[in-house]
Image: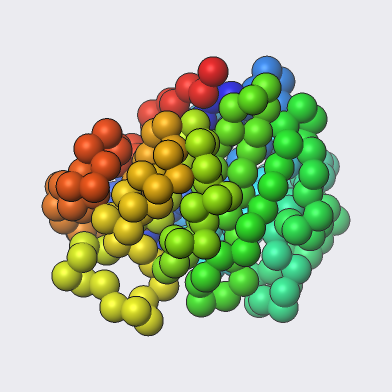
Length: 235
């Protein structure tokens, strides 16, 4: 499997950037994880969105799902339908995505998308949210989505080849009631789960990205900051 970071900004896109969106490919099977603000235009530069096998939405916050609204127009004009796996809890954004262009299904009921096995785990966030695990040929990619707790994710992430983890805050910024992890907490998850590679994501525009990475590397020196446009291969 290969992963392309479409966007990794938290809350809102940076200049010429995009919020959460990750493209996973294996042979002719392509899955998009989240479709936040700014993702669609960058996705269009890579592939026809109508050729996606599915989009998996981790939760219904706008920075993870709002570009579904303009994708809906693309599908309408081209008379296409896409499968969307997402939480089915009541949510205004979900409600306005209900249309004939989207076949919206319960994210908890995914099993396989082509040869890719999909598993989900509920995570702690300010509304229903799920971590996603994609596995194929003995390799796996895990995306935490947004969460403010990491301890319950250790067994789910065990020995994964690529872990993409929420890492929004510096240690000194974090409080127990905030909805995201610190970069150092993400590193603890990567270390304790023995993930082969950790990518820090959901850095808010204007944040001190160097300090975020430095604090994470105090725990896990090999971790990296996700960068829009980069490819990561899991073989």
